[in-house]
Amino acid sequence: MVMPLTMARTGDINSIKKVGGKDDTKRFLESLGFVAGSPVTLISANQGNLIVSIKESRIAISKEMANKIFV
Image (cartoon, rainbow, N blue to C red; front, side, top):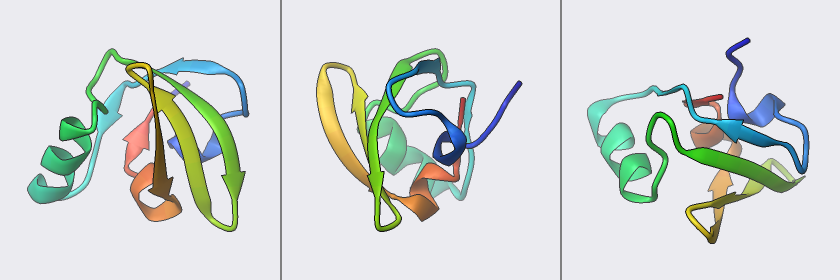
């Protein structure tokens, strides 16, 4: 089942299926490591922002950006 990253459960390791949005947004997310096939783990979600673990780094992204990443 494909769903936006915002719907993932905290602590679950998910595989990125697709990154949506405009070209600039896609390039930005890909530069952070959000590419199809990469594992991503939701660490926490608070006040609309998400902290995720990807490629051995922790990154904070907005809910708006997270809705463009499908796992």
